[in-house]
Image 1 (cartoon, helix red, strand yellow):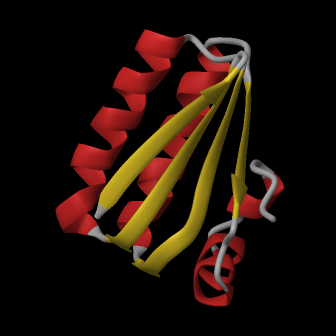
Image 2: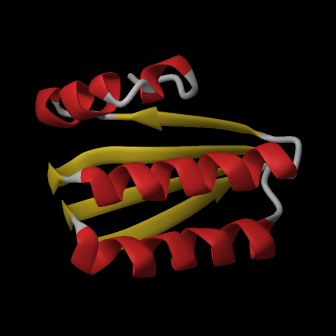
Length: 101
């Protein structure tokens, strides 16, 4: 799993590529948290176009990032969600908290 982040004004976009599973989740959540602390964005978007697989550990990454942005008073969204990931996120009720596109 790789992570690439870009900043545009006060918006932070994090692009993920690879498998978002229990092997990668802890490290990805840590790195996203570091980016939030460093950049202090008012909006965070996780781009999942490059995610080839996601299990329930990916839910923890998204919820952890969502909570960090909520605590900071910012917004959070997820884009590029594959059909497989969207099914998992919808079944877990995540789509009611986080905009999925």
